[in-house]
Amino acid sequence: MISTRGRYALRVMIDIAEQSNTGYIPLNDIATRQAISEKYLESIVVLLTRGGLLEGVRGKGGGYKLTRTPDEYPLSSILRLTEGSLAPVACLKEGATCERSPFCKTLPVWKGFYAVIDHYLSGVTLADLLNPTEK
Amino acid sequence: MISTRGRYALRVMIDIAEQSNTGYIPLNDIATRQAISEKYLESIVVLLTRGGLLEGVRGKGGGYKLTRTPDEYPLSSILRLTEGSLAPVACLKEGATCERSPFCKTLPVWKGFYAVIDHYLSGVTLADLLNPTEK
DNA sequence: TTTTAACCTACCATTTTGATATGTTGAATA
DNA sequence: TATTCAACATATCAAAATGGTAGGTTAAAA
View (tube, each protein chain N blue to C red):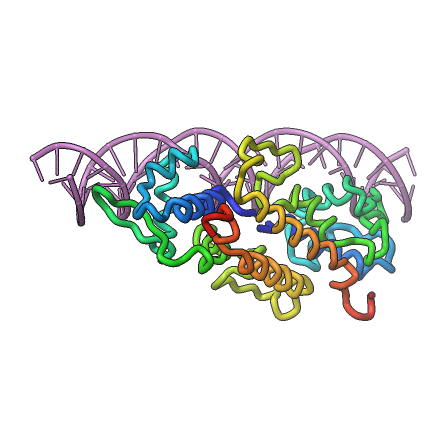
């Protein structure tokens, strides 16, 4: 299940995209607009910045900015970064190893499930979530 | 993400389906075959029994049995029961309420995601996971 | 040099996860 | 009828994840 990290990350990205004609957007403004604790948002936004989805600039006039256009952000990229993985079962997480896998009867279904999840979240981009005018 | 509860539940259901010509299957046997703690399985199987997916009989010669044929168990029914819900976000859980929902920009995407998840897991049945001979 | 705002580190309460332990009830069998 | 088997019930628990909070440091502009 997608936790608040992923959900808040999406809202932050939308918020920035909608304000993005205004240059860099300070997290303070975002936190106020979205009614989410700024301190908690910090821990989420740092993932997006390190992952290259956002650019942060310090000091006066600073804040965050998108590094691409909204249509270049599939939701999968945002959620994979903040949730750590989109794998629906631990067995499919990167680096996971299971001795049952050669004969596991459930593995194919989990792989199919993973593919469906990834396909859906890769087919929707940030641009699809914006106000029509901002697209 | 699907936890061990759901994953083990699937394996138990497959195990019972494959042995089901032998009448009632004691949990002890299943735990041994699947190499999972019997006591932990108990807490999972009770959900399946209460949900009507399995029938349990006590005493000597007792055990568990399917209440339907394997093709009548969509995986969604097994996983929904053991995981509590298949909703990908807390906002979509039964009984959940959110004051943002009337204007939430992410809600439609979560609903679509939920629909995709439900569709996939409803389209695969227990029968699809069995050995070809047991189908 | 003061203000602003990102960045960094540490901690913490609550919930969920993944069990274990110790029984009790009910059905068959010897 | 006593014994055995196995479901059913309840309590507890360690570890991890979740959802934060607190306090400080660095860098950039005014």
